[in-house]
Figure: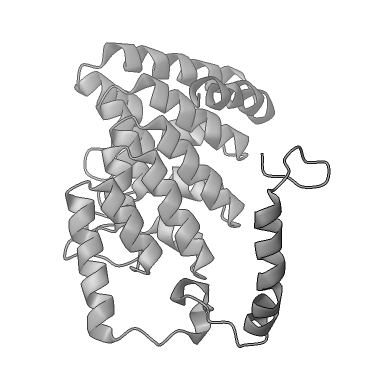
Length: 261
């Protein structure tokens, strides 16, 4: 520990003398205008980035996202790349990171976007060409921590969690449908629990049908041979028919707590 006067370390006499001799120089230097590094300069006072420079940053971010290059994504986001920028298929870096299961990157993207003045709800609700959100993709691959992050951040920014959980893609599939198709039983339980916590009607939620085939999540689980998921959804359906809305929501909300860890 470096210390003087009670901090447990005594500087040598020669050192103290040297410091005394330097005081006039330090005082003189302090009178001069301090030179700050570029990183210390307020962003609003920095020269505006040219259109070409911004486009280069945004494209580099897209490339890093496609290659799942986490360190490069972090560097580019902090350097000012636009997290809301879309590629030719309307994919954002958040959509790709959610699909790949990169929770840390998803959190960084949302935090930096909010810090730069962007609306986190718009970013989280952004859809690719098939009208799927980041939550759709996280649910499809069973990335529960990312599902939890997206729902929490959406609600924190003032959005209604029910809207993002029940959002439908171009053929009417919700995140619950996609989790059911892949047999992600825990993800299904989590989504149902979060929908209940948000005050949604569970019976309506689990009986939501897609546009093309008119199938519910249970129908899809049975169609795809996901027996465990189908059995779980049947149980939920039976309970939804017995309990009233308040009772069912109180019961199902525990699913979110049990599966988010």
